[in-house]
Length: 230
Ligand SMILES: [Mg+2]
Image (cartoon, rainbow, N blue to C red; front, side, top):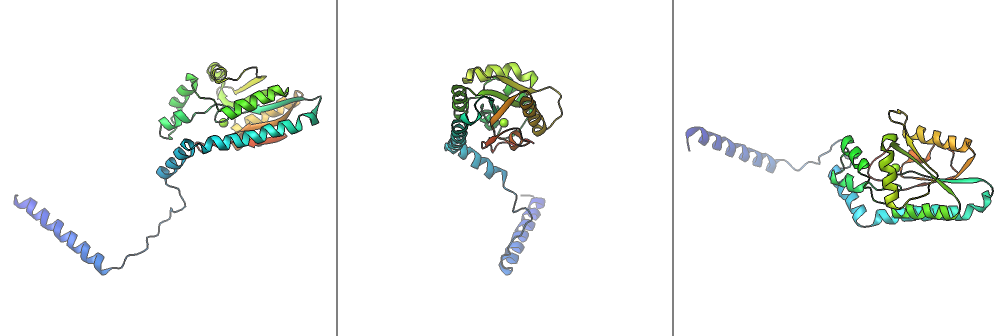
Protein backbone atom coordinates (compact mmCIF):
# COMPACT_ATOMS: atom_id res chain seq x y z
CA UNK A 1 0.00 0.00 0.00
CA UNK A 2 1.52 3.35 -0.94
CA UNK A 3 1.63 6.26 1.49
CA UNK A 4 -1.42 8.01 -0.01
CA UNK A 5 -3.71 5.03 0.60
CA UNK A 6 -2.17 4.50 4.05
CA UNK A 7 -3.11 8.09 4.94
CA UNK A 8 -6.68 7.65 3.57
CA UNK A 9 -7.08 4.44 5.58
CA UNK A 10 -5.77 6.18 8.73
CA UNK A 11 -8.16 9.12 8.27
CA UNK A 12 -11.10 6.76 7.72
CA UNK A 13 -10.22 4.84 10.90
CA UNK A 14 -9.99 8.10 12.86
CA UNK A 15 -13.33 9.26 11.47
CA UNK A 16 -15.09 5.99 12.41
CA UNK A 17 -13.56 6.12 15.91
CA UNK A 18 -14.73 9.73 16.39
CA UNK A 19 -18.26 8.83 15.24
CA UNK A 20 -18.33 5.83 17.59
CA UNK A 21 -17.15 7.94 20.53
CA UNK A 22 -19.70 10.65 19.69
CA UNK A 23 -22.48 8.08 19.38
CA UNK A 24 -21.54 6.50 22.69
CA UNK A 25 -21.54 9.88 24.43
CA UNK A 26 -24.79 11.16 22.94
CA UNK A 27 -28.12 9.51 23.75
CA UNK A 28 -30.31 8.52 20.78
CA UNK A 29 -32.53 11.38 19.69
CA UNK A 30 -36.02 11.18 18.30
CA UNK A 31 -35.83 12.16 14.65
CA UNK A 32 -38.62 14.47 13.60
CA UNK A 33 -39.30 15.02 9.94
CA UNK A 34 -41.88 17.09 8.13
CA UNK A 35 -43.13 14.38 5.79
CA UNK A 36 -44.68 11.83 8.08
CA UNK A 37 -48.13 12.31 6.55
CA UNK A 38 -46.93 11.49 3.04
CA UNK A 39 -47.33 7.77 2.25
CA UNK A 40 -44.25 6.00 0.93
CA UNK A 41 -44.82 5.16 -2.74
CA UNK A 42 -43.15 1.74 -2.56
CA UNK A 43 -45.41 0.73 0.32
CA UNK A 44 -48.50 2.05 -1.45
CA UNK A 45 -47.63 0.10 -4.61
CA UNK A 46 -47.36 -3.05 -2.52
CA UNK A 47 -50.74 -2.37 -0.90
CA UNK A 48 -52.37 -1.90 -4.32
CA UNK A 49 -50.81 -5.10 -5.71
CA UNK A 50 -52.14 -6.97 -2.70
CA UNK A 51 -55.56 -5.31 -3.06
CA UNK A 52 -55.84 -6.73 -6.59
CA UNK A 53 -54.12 -10.10 -6.09
CA UNK A 54 -56.09 -10.92 -2.94
CA UNK A 55 -59.41 -10.57 -4.76
CA UNK A 56 -60.58 -7.68 -2.56
CA UNK A 57 -60.79 -5.31 -5.54
CA UNK A 58 -63.13 -7.71 -7.35
CA UNK A 59 -65.20 -8.23 -4.23
CA UNK A 60 -65.68 -4.50 -3.73
CA UNK A 61 -66.57 -3.97 -7.40
CA UNK A 62 -69.08 -6.79 -7.09
CA UNK A 63 -70.61 -5.26 -3.95
CA UNK A 64 -71.17 -1.87 -5.63
CA UNK A 65 -72.58 -3.45 -8.79
CA UNK A 66 -74.93 -5.54 -6.66
CA UNK A 67 -76.26 -2.33 -5.10
CA UNK A 68 -76.75 -0.73 -8.53
CA UNK A 69 -78.54 -3.84 -9.73
CA UNK A 70 -80.84 -3.77 -6.69
CA UNK A 71 -81.56 -0.10 -7.28
CA UNK A 72 -82.57 -0.80 -10.88
CA UNK A 73 -84.76 -3.69 -9.80
CA UNK A 74 -86.45 -1.67 -7.05
CA UNK A 75 -87.08 1.50 -9.04
CA UNK A 76 -87.72 0.57 -12.65
CA UNK A 77 -91.49 0.20 -12.16
CA UNK A 78 -91.77 3.59 -10.43
CA UNK A 79 -90.75 5.25 -13.70
CA UNK A 80 -93.01 3.37 -16.09
CA UNK A 81 -93.45 5.26 -19.34
CA UNK A 82 -90.10 7.06 -19.17
CA UNK A 83 -87.15 6.36 -21.45
CA UNK A 84 -84.94 4.96 -18.71
CA UNK A 85 -81.18 4.98 -19.07
CA UNK A 86 -78.17 3.67 -17.21
CA UNK A 87 -74.92 5.56 -17.81
CA UNK A 88 -71.66 3.65 -17.54
CA UNK A 89 -68.13 4.94 -17.62
CA UNK A 90 -65.65 2.66 -19.44
CA UNK A 91 -62.13 2.61 -17.94
CA UNK A 92 -61.96 0.93 -14.53
CA UNK A 93 -65.75 0.62 -14.72
CA UNK A 94 -66.38 -1.80 -17.61
CA UNK A 95 -62.83 -2.44 -18.80
CA UNK A 96 -59.75 -2.86 -16.61
CA UNK A 97 -56.40 -1.27 -17.40
CA UNK A 98 -54.70 -2.80 -14.38
CA UNK A 99 -52.53 -5.15 -16.52
CA UNK A 100 -51.01 -2.12 -18.27
CA UNK A 101 -50.65 -0.03 -15.11
CA UNK A 102 -48.92 -2.93 -13.34
CA UNK A 103 -46.58 -3.49 -16.30
CA UNK A 104 -45.46 0.13 -15.99
CA UNK A 105 -44.99 -0.17 -12.22
CA UNK A 106 -47.85 2.31 -11.67
CA UNK A 107 -46.22 4.98 -13.81
CA UNK A 108 -48.25 6.89 -16.39
CA UNK A 109 -46.68 7.40 -19.80
CA UNK A 110 -49.26 9.04 -22.12
CA UNK A 111 -47.93 7.42 -25.31
CA UNK A 112 -47.79 3.96 -23.76
CA UNK A 113 -51.28 4.43 -22.32
CA UNK A 114 -52.62 5.50 -25.72
CA UNK A 115 -51.02 2.46 -27.35
CA UNK A 116 -52.60 0.19 -24.76
CA UNK A 117 -56.06 1.69 -25.38
CA UNK A 118 -55.64 1.29 -29.14
CA UNK A 119 -54.63 -2.36 -28.66
CA UNK A 120 -58.16 -3.02 -27.39
CA UNK A 121 -56.93 -5.59 -24.88
CA UNK A 122 -58.40 -4.21 -21.65
CA UNK A 123 -60.08 -7.14 -19.88
CA UNK A 124 -63.71 -7.04 -18.85
CA UNK A 125 -64.85 -6.07 -15.36
CA UNK A 126 -67.36 -8.89 -15.05
CA UNK A 127 -69.75 -7.44 -12.44
CA UNK A 128 -70.27 -4.39 -14.68
CA UNK A 129 -70.97 -6.60 -17.70
CA UNK A 130 -73.51 -8.51 -15.60
CA UNK A 131 -75.09 -5.20 -14.58
CA UNK A 132 -75.16 -4.09 -18.23
CA UNK A 133 -77.00 -7.28 -19.19
CA UNK A 134 -79.41 -6.93 -16.28
CA UNK A 135 -80.31 -3.40 -17.40
CA UNK A 136 -81.02 -4.78 -20.88
CA UNK A 137 -83.35 -7.41 -19.42
CA UNK A 138 -85.24 -4.64 -17.62
CA UNK A 139 -85.62 -2.57 -20.79
CA UNK A 140 -83.17 0.10 -19.62
CA UNK A 141 -80.98 1.56 -22.36
CA UNK A 142 -77.26 1.94 -21.68
CA UNK A 143 -75.14 4.89 -22.71
CA UNK A 144 -71.39 4.81 -22.20
CA UNK A 145 -69.95 8.23 -21.40
CA UNK A 146 -66.17 8.10 -21.43
CA UNK A 147 -63.21 10.45 -21.41
CA UNK A 148 -61.66 8.31 -24.13
CA UNK A 149 -61.11 10.22 -27.35
CA UNK A 150 -63.02 10.00 -30.61
CA UNK A 151 -59.77 8.82 -32.22
CA UNK A 152 -60.01 5.79 -29.93
CA UNK A 153 -63.59 4.92 -30.95
CA UNK A 154 -62.83 1.97 -33.23
CA UNK A 155 -60.53 0.33 -30.68
CA UNK A 156 -63.03 1.01 -27.90
CA UNK A 157 -65.94 -0.56 -29.80
CA UNK A 158 -63.77 -3.59 -30.62
CA UNK A 159 -62.65 -3.92 -27.00
CA UNK A 160 -66.19 -3.58 -25.60
CA UNK A 161 -67.54 -6.16 -28.06
CA UNK A 162 -64.74 -8.63 -27.31
CA UNK A 163 -65.42 -8.14 -23.61
CA UNK A 164 -69.06 -9.18 -24.14
CA UNK A 165 -70.92 -5.85 -24.37
CA UNK A 166 -73.44 -5.50 -27.18
CA UNK A 167 -76.53 -3.52 -28.17
CA UNK A 168 -75.73 -0.40 -26.19
CA UNK A 169 -77.73 2.70 -27.09
CA UNK A 170 -74.86 5.19 -27.30
CA UNK A 171 -71.11 5.55 -26.93
CA UNK A 172 -70.24 9.16 -26.10
CA UNK A 173 -66.52 9.93 -26.35
CA UNK A 174 -64.58 13.15 -25.96
CA UNK A 175 -63.79 15.03 -29.18
CA UNK A 176 -60.03 15.18 -29.80
CA UNK A 177 -58.62 18.41 -28.45
CA UNK A 178 -61.61 19.10 -26.18
CA UNK A 179 -60.09 20.91 -23.17
CA UNK A 180 -63.02 20.29 -20.77
CA UNK A 181 -62.47 18.55 -17.49
CA UNK A 182 -64.03 15.12 -17.21
CA UNK A 183 -66.55 16.50 -14.70
CA UNK A 184 -67.83 19.24 -17.00
CA UNK A 185 -67.74 17.06 -20.16
CA UNK A 186 -69.65 14.19 -18.58
CA UNK A 187 -72.23 16.25 -16.71
CA UNK A 188 -72.90 18.25 -19.90
CA UNK A 189 -73.46 15.01 -21.84
CA UNK A 190 -75.91 13.79 -19.20
CA UNK A 191 -77.71 17.13 -19.40
CA UNK A 192 -77.98 16.67 -23.18
CA UNK A 193 -79.41 13.17 -22.74
CA UNK A 194 -81.92 14.50 -20.22
CA UNK A 195 -82.91 17.35 -22.55
CA UNK A 196 -83.42 14.74 -25.29
CA UNK A 197 -86.07 13.02 -23.18
CA UNK A 198 -84.07 10.30 -21.45
CA UNK A 199 -84.23 9.75 -17.70
CA UNK A 200 -80.91 8.64 -16.16
CA UNK A 201 -81.91 6.27 -13.39
CA UNK A 202 -78.43 5.00 -12.54
CA UNK A 203 -74.93 6.27 -13.24
CA UNK A 204 -71.88 4.10 -12.49
CA UNK A 205 -68.23 5.15 -12.58
CA UNK A 206 -64.90 4.81 -10.80
CA UNK A 207 -64.25 8.58 -10.46
CA UNK A 208 -66.24 11.20 -8.58
CA UNK A 209 -65.99 13.26 -11.78
CA UNK A 210 -68.08 10.54 -13.49
CA UNK A 211 -70.86 11.04 -10.99
CA UNK A 212 -70.98 14.64 -9.76
CA UNK A 213 -72.76 17.45 -11.57
CA UNK A 214 -76.33 16.16 -11.47
CA UNK A 215 -78.58 14.56 -14.10
CA UNK A 216 -78.58 11.11 -12.46
CA UNK A 217 -81.13 9.78 -9.98
CA UNK A 218 -78.65 7.45 -8.26
CA UNK A 219 -74.88 7.22 -8.55
CA UNK A 220 -72.59 4.30 -7.73
CA UNK A 221 -68.87 4.77 -7.17
CA UNK A 222 -66.55 1.86 -7.93
CA UNK A 223 -63.12 1.64 -6.28
CA UNK A 224 -60.04 2.79 -8.21
CA UNK A 225 -56.75 3.19 -6.37
CA UNK A 226 -54.76 3.62 -9.63
CA UNK A 227 -55.42 7.23 -10.69
CA UNK A 228 -57.59 10.29 -10.12
CA UNK A 229 -59.44 12.22 -12.84
CA UNK A 230 -60.94 15.65 -12.30
MG1 LIG B 1 -63.15 5.44 -15.42
